[in-house]
Length: 247
Image 1: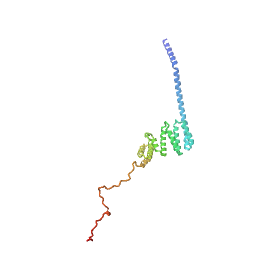
Image 2: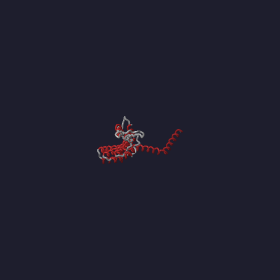
Image 3: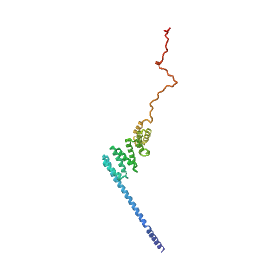
Image 4: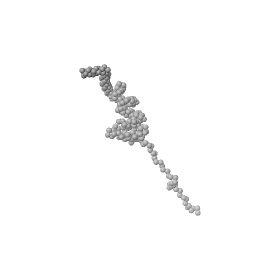
């Protein structure tokens, strides 16, 4: 009899607990299912967005290779606006910058690359963009902009390429010591997997002007004040010789 009452008490206790906490349990289950469904939908959305962005970028690549500027700009703007969080938007800016340079629109190319550098993330595409922007600045005869753009990236995978361009910029600014130092850093690139043309950089180092102006020549030596100077042979005056005619 006691065992029967004990079981009834346990059942009643479970019913009481369920009445108090059942709605929380159900709510937790519903919330967990909702989170799981939402997460799966979000992953599916991102996958769909990436596939769409990939397709749009393929279209852009064909337009750029065909030199279709207006069509390329329209496709690129669609990628910037609708798929800006994907890597394809960054790749689109790199492609458009190249197309602008092909059309001699260097400022449009520079503006496009500056917009790329302003985006968060995408470190690899930004390193490429920074390299190409520095080359445009050199083309535009803006060496100081190159120095400002590339300084402070000694540890990046593009360090050697940056240093070569820094050397070019310092040379243009007449900063010969800084140019030589930058070229030497570029020459320190791993020879087993070089990222720069070491022979070309060596030629640039050889062609650097002297850091200090060369002497025009040794100053002519002047005789010391206490040194006697013998007259030239044709300047010697012979003493008069008495011929004896006066006698």
